[in-house]
Length: 238
Image (cartoon, rainbow, N blue to C red; front, side):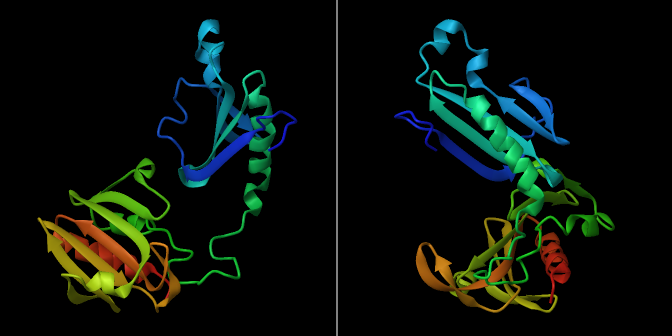
């Protein structure tokens, strides 16, 4: 951004999970903007005047929390004699006001829609909780993977797109529900990959490649890993 100075304004942002101490952190100030909680952190505000005088830029960060502990995390930096938070505040308000209008995943006309497009890797948790002992916390999750324990076994569920030849390496073919897949064991950990759709032309490691949508699960109990893999694929649209 151009603010008329030689340095200009740098704005970086990402969509991620809110920090685990979002509500309780002693850093910055917890605010409510249009009904949405946001944490504003001016790093210089905690420094002594002597230390602040040595800073080379003014910075301000905002964490804006939305549903399911998803947050927009933004940082603004500019010349040292400017107030970065004064610039960040209207940007945070703009994020909040436009968030309800953000396009849903897969809505771009250029998107290859698969069974994973509108699916969430943690959606299986409530189903598993009906019959298994499940330990789960939102702060342990990412946008494409879900970490939890089932009957004491730690599991990682990941939604991904991979070249088919990667799935077959040192693995045995198997079935998960109605889906073909592969299983392998390495140093006591079981890895499963269930193919949940047709292949399409995409990019892998920066190169054009044929990809398939997969559900990948790993854990140290082969039976639990298989059960969870099947439970996940059974929830996906057919």
